[in-house]
Image (tube, rainbow, N blue to C red; front, top):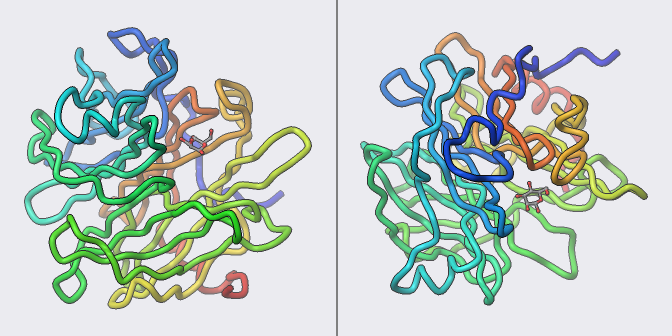
Length: 311
Ligand code: BMA
């Protein structure tokens, strides 16, 4: 058997709707960050009307989380954000930079899906900054560092012509984004052949930026969502140093195979630890939250020494 790259926590799932003190149908696709030694999780839940909100949970050890009594982020009720968040807020990523946390999340409305950017310092109040894409974008992750003074993000525009791919864009001020180019594409008849998308906020390592992303394969039984790993150049993140040929995680546990959407593992967050490990968080079947651990060095090795051919 293939050796496990990600060791699943033995008490998965770590968070379900039963842990949430307000009515929700699911708990999944959470951004996670370590702050002052505590883990903060911003997770997505479907309400019973099918639209999503973001909840907050905290933990001392990264495994056992307690949910706050009120949701953290619900659709805005006034201004331009109200128009574009009408159908819900989804799949939030947390990027620690300077002394604040930047939040990117998908917003749905009658105009389609686009990305909003907000900031928080304390995970109590949140300030919306801007809507940073047009329609048909999902899965935007920011790098936790500037490059020659500019912020950088990985994003995933929709395309009818080529399979959905990962792009990079830059901004001087978090509001205006451009200088975009494609950096990674799905590989034909490969586990991620249908589409790929940014996953967790990239992790800085000595060898490069480690990016855990998702890839989708179409089957007769619907799509299968798996996770893979890519390494970007430290100074120039538009340059890919390698992409692991094999996936690092696929749906295998019963709560990953069966649920609201079956056969899904989907990440929005991973926390690097001082001992060289990483805690990887993923939604199982769009229904529950799970966690596992991996060695950062092993993930880097997969990218550099077991890489597929660049596109
Ligand atoms: C994607 C997004 C994710 C979801 C995944 C699997 O397109 O909607 O939020 O986890 O599909 O359903």
